[in-house]
Image 1 (spheres, helix red, strand yellow):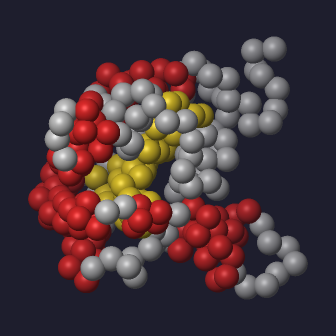
Image 2 (image 1 turned 90 degrees about the vertical axis):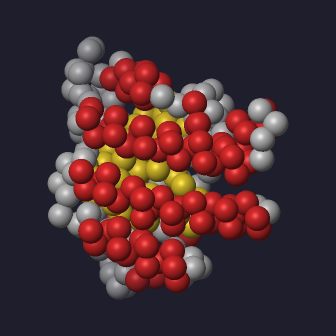
Length: 239
């Protein structure tokens, strides 16, 4: 974990991309139109985070609870996700961004799984930034599944459990804890996202709907993060 360092820039940023459907409905358009516009914000966020020096960016694309949404919306989301994986991979390569998809894969279509495998394989050697897309993701389910693969041991460490989580999430190399968690759309809850990894994350809630979330909003969230005194249970260095 990082200590409180003046001017420290977040190395792992996570974003709950909320507000696509509401953004579209406010404009008299179908919710799927909001997801299409939200995909443009994904590109902006990824490229801006890469330029800014973020090492890991985790985006909440589709939660396990989202399967309960109308089937036409779910189908459109999965189709959009597969299409963007194919079309955006060359751009990820150009920017040196490695792609990793976390979450369950057994409920995804074979076509989508193949697209995920191909994008991960093609970007595997990129070292500029790691983009993690959480798809069919539930933090609580992840914790349960991680517990089931661990051998029974009297001395289980946090590092042991973190490695099990990484294996469940298809990223055996592991990632650092989240420094900054941003949620757009005005809601103020975690929605079962990265509960373990966000143990000491700084939380920033933006009223901006995700399709409108721009570079300036990203920078504003980072500025808020950098203004805080991260003590990790200790005392402030300002005292």
